[in-house]
Image (tube, rainbow, N blue to C red):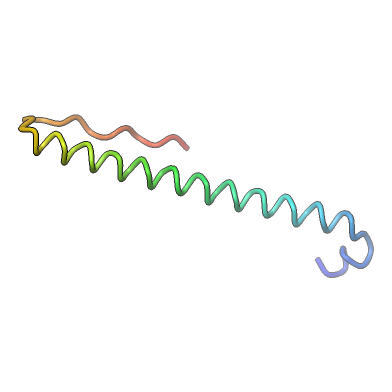
Length: 63
């Protein structure tokens, strides 16, 4: 990458920008997956406390 930066700084900037965008998307997806898991757990606990016999499983997070 260092050589790319010397030869074509604009190309290096584009590459780094794409890498950062991919990492941000992965982080966003991880947060969404975690939130879905927490929501499912809270939903199950709420149903259990309300006396539901067989709470349905939480929704599967999209990937």
